[in-house]
Image (tube, rainbow, N blue to C red; front, side, top):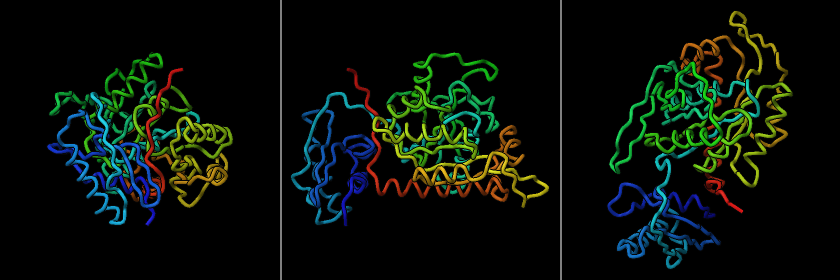
Length: 366
């Protein structure tokens, strides 16, 4: 068996810090994992230099590696111990996968795709959250029929006040739209918008989630940078339409995520508005914006096409009425989102098995 960093972090999730319900990975105590053949080495970061639990934790880590990775793993004596006095508390410790949903340009139905992907993932049995990161044009509350909802606050054990997300169709939701008048324009400078996103992420009472989807604004902006600097994003999903003007902007979005400075894997592309199908003629397809543009681009870029979603009147009606089409698995579009969600889950699993965990982008000042 070839040992990869994920094998190590998976094993160490079985080791809780003494007296805590959180494991070492959730506490961000495991750092600098290095693997050379069967030799496994990493650092354990403690809050105090005189922590009496150090020997116990090191011994528990060695036992977990030998049990869950393999008895031939060479780990004894290779665990170094460090101490910091103000260890940063991990953000979203209970969230397994953070998925950014982005588009190169506006008007391609990115928020519609985000909402229906979230609902489809929940219907598949996953624990799902959705953050509306389109700070200047929040639409998620309306799409869920929760425009008048106002999230409550809850004080947790460590004394912090967290925001309880609104929950509907099995999806936990937070949006800046819950905190502003729907008819008011949000006129904020970039830093204010970025801080609002960080608060939705870090102050949300998300609990345990399999997937947290982040519906980003179109294009590339401060919001995108703030996201990758705040949390380690598992991967990105790009939404487009088949037309050339949308596809040209997709390449910019893919390059932004896959660039060296960000380094977030692109899990796949979803082609929205692939064709028009009249309700009275369900077998007919009219390629209003061109045929298979997203499919061809995905092939050219070497990324997965997660799905093609047709234009059907029920999508617009569902968005306006607060009932996403993915709620109805029997509809043409509902089925399209169910299939796209399955492909997304598969891609996330492949990404997590074959690649190292994504790290937050560090801000460096020159």
